[in-house]
Length: 368
Image (cartoon, rainbow, N blue to C red; front, side, top):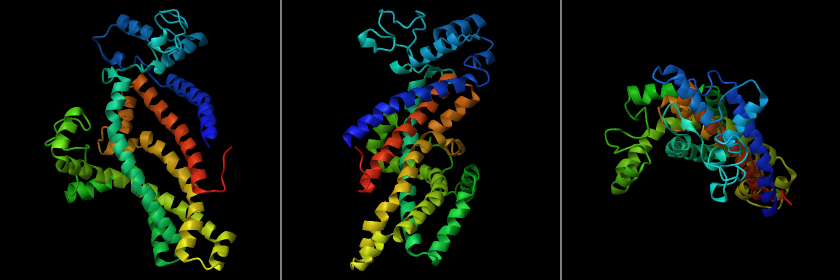
């Protein structure tokens, strides 16, 4: 297993490289380009814009070599200041700075400057990361748990009232647009009933600072009940929006996989040996039915990280999805590339996690 994981990690390097190329050239096709935000500021001269573009190897010319240099500068292979593959110390620019390499580009932690927020992109992303991680983890755990429970019971009690109710629930919520469901939850539970807050991750009137900042954590440890309950109440509606749609689809996957497992010969053999129904279901059938859910669950982690744009925007959650939406409106070149690349890398990584989980769930699967 260890050799397989190492081999897959090495295979992921060219895949991530190809993803970075695709992400970069997709951004080249975006209207406006990296200087679009500057064009709206009459106090910034064209000379200043040109200097900024040259600093980041972003002076666009029709030649293919200029595009390659632009990509190399963004990645950290090309030294934009020296105009070569060598750093100021005469070493290859892609090497770490302590080995004499460069200090520009993604490889060196220099992800560019967010023009919209006037901060380093990496700083902006790390600042928004806690909100998305909290939302993602909470929704992921709840929806996988509910999908397993509903799917297994619906399969065991096939065509029962419970199975029919789960089927109706699944088709109804799976067909609902996420933005409409979120707005309806706000209208009913926030505006009409006043049960839950409709925006942000914490209440501005009691929060001492941004969520997960140093001052927020200091206040949290002095009164964890107050601040923990405040965050939990703000999470109810956005988590419900994500979970309702996702459970509807995944519960059907679990039901279908369980029905297929329950009809296999090894299940009939286990019953013929006199094993209890609970052991037959959970020890034999359920373990094999996990495989399709492992695939969905692993890939949906990456979806939650970068794809919950609609949910975070509706509830004004200052996370990665809402950050992407803001960057898109502002033509924030570097910010968009950073978020897209992170989401793409997560897809590759959780594909590996799913492959490893297959062997844990199904003893028949072995990797050499």
